[in-house]
Image (cartoon, rainbow, N blue to C red; front, side, top):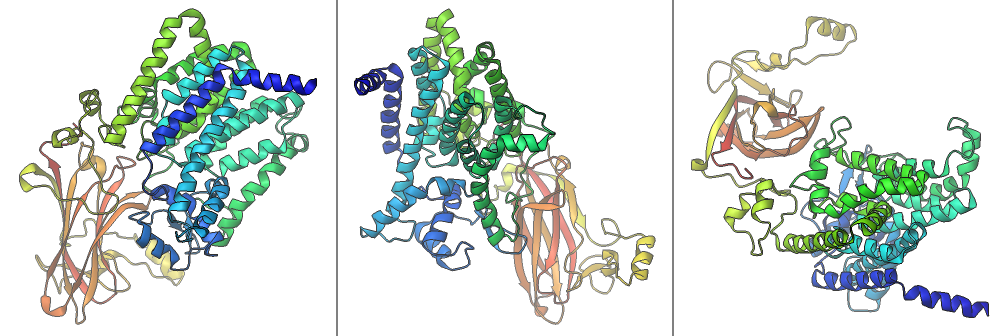
Length: 635
């Protein structure tokens, strides 16, 4: 009898609108994915996330010391640059991305490997079976996430129609569609599902009165998939508390949270072990590019939320209903209301502090996709309130925001909405556009900056010089000079202080009477430094740097370096390299350079000459000329 009742209950569950909403979403996403199937999903960022698996299970080379990795890049063209690896403190190459994505894809990697072994494809970790398995796995994760999210929402909202409408809104009116079908297999979709599973386990553990090991495992997987997901910890603390004590009563707190820590520890230890093996340290910060990082005290909140470039609420306006629903969630359950509010505020703040707040190529704010599982709760309460008050307004809101999202997702696929360079003018002028962009349309976008090569210098008639700087070494201006007291202290300690002033010579010069000698012990010329705010008021400028070099009795290899510096670190570093022979006399070296998107207006354009092989040489007339477009793009 009980078996019949359970079977009947399962059948009745399957007739609910919310199940059909998930089924419809799964079918729609499958069709969308089929039309946008990636040529090689194991490329660019995903290539970096994925490297753990073939490196460990196929090549036995987790340190990436063997030549197979370069053969893969040549064969599959996964990336034009090897930015997925960064140097560790010990000089070894370390995968930039955390290990969680690879752990989540482990079953699908093995499916792909078996598939390759049973077919004519090479079992090298990157052939078509591996690519297809990863794509299918990413899709499966999203569908599972929607199913779990339906269960979570059903515990808050008893009206199944509201749950169904919420799932429809999440599916059709947000960039979860883009993340699933077009930017498939990025970490955000996996994290969306992990958030849904975490919420489900939290609900179960709250019924028992304490957090379990499975919460720890999910939290661990999330943190080692994307380290910024540590922002969810305050939400857990609000929901579960400190075990009846205060936060500073550590023995009591640890005893209460011990199962979570036991679940979390093995997952985090996998990441720490990898860092220990490759970087030589159990804790390693891999995002060490000085051009990007967390600007903690200068969040880009307005741009992050509302800008035409990537404003979250501009491209995903349905989420305004979630903010409306937070108030209703507080009324329903103050603890959950507080937890979701704290998570939302901290999450948005954290994500908006990242220097490149637009998060590269994506439709809308991809960094918010994973949090839709949490935001679905207040979104459901917002939909429920509007259903009760203004049903027509609600239906119109969902239909219109879904239509907008579908149309703009298609525009993104066609290149009408650019991956990361949208402007107000481009957004408004291209709003109804269905034809690919012509040159006029492209000029409404922000400046295109190549990630792999030096940009093409514009026609001379289209630019105008706005600044010029010259280092001719005819005076000490711009030369580092150490004060007398520092020289005396260095002498007492038996150390030598190199003043670049000492390397100015009046025996060799191209113009005037003085030049600068560069040899092995003084390999770098004095730098010309100009803060960006003194270069231009535009979003970009063109820079032409040059210098004259004369070799001593043997050929000398030199580089003209142009870079930007932030807190002493270089970014957008470029060089022009030449060899100067004695018989050539004075030889000019030039470099043309497009400024990057600077992290701070006080970051300095830095230009200097580097003697690479240490042979005697002289430098003179280092110059920097700054140009602006007469008709700037993106204006």
